[in-house]
Image 1 (tube, helix red, strand yellow):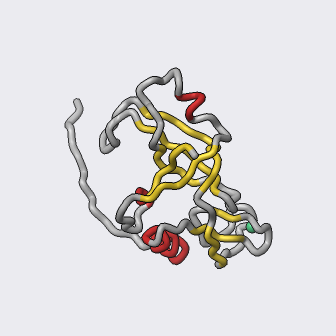
Image 2 (cartoon, rainbow, N blue to C red):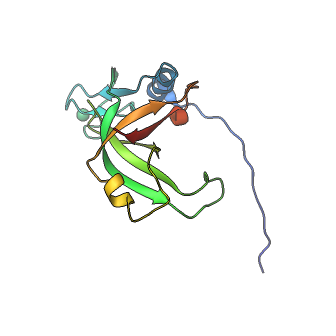
Image 3 (spheres, rainbow, N blue to C red):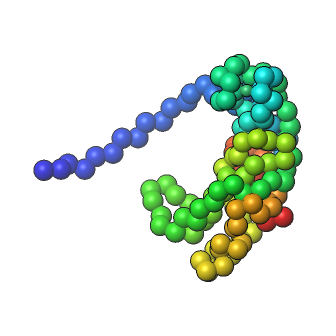
Length: 146
Ligand SMILES: [Zn+2]
């Protein structure tokens, strides 16, 4: 026997200094990463610790707003809370970064899946586009083909 149920648990959590700086910069249409003093990797979004060296990282750097697609997927099946399908999400390594950040891809015709491998090719150039009123959310920007 199964009894359907649903939990709704609103909450707030502290995101830390690095993430706070990242989201505050988005309001100014800037994207920040952090540079590790030891290995010089630049992680986007910034972290408190280098994921390679496990050393604390405090240097924030602004990265470019062009990048290359490192991974991409097109979602065609909706799920609870999803945006309307189809939509594309890509991991993009921005200029000056050594890691990739995920976000939506717009400006690509997603209605014909046969054209998508060419339109969203791994290694293809994309640019960051900010919305009209950045609010300090990761959805303030998205990627479009460059
Ligand atoms: Zn490092």
